[in-house]
Image (tube, rainbow, N blue to C red; front, side):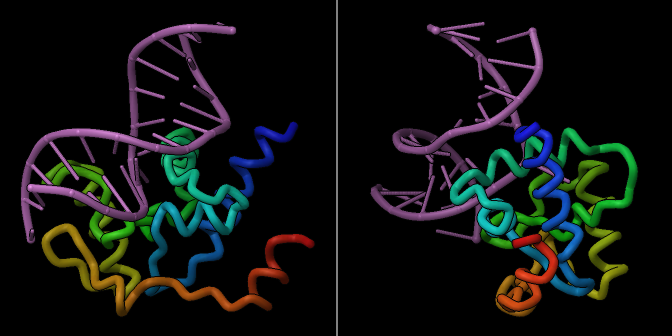
Length: 114
DNA sequence: GGTGTGACAACAA
DNA sequence: TTTGTTGCCACAC
């Protein structure tokens, strides 16, 4: 049961990302209790790839660029979703300085059990 | 239980 | 800034 819980934890964290903000894979991994397991986050998200209940588009690379090749359907999709969130996307990347999610502790404690 | 994989991250040139 | 290299580790075969 621990394994499935992890995916769900990741999804839970992603769902917490507010509209108009983004987070890096590493950041999500960290919040989900996997310090340094950014690649696991990508695995989990790709494994999800079904229902669109998840704001996966708010998860970017540490540099703020979209994790897909420019011009790919997924990249376009993600760009669209980000724009819909009010996040400016230029050349497959966003300004992390402006949009990076800065979760406050009480918020996290309230939403991530404990 | 070994091997390859991955929607990454950090660093070197 | 872009490209290549390395480290990372759970997961599927």
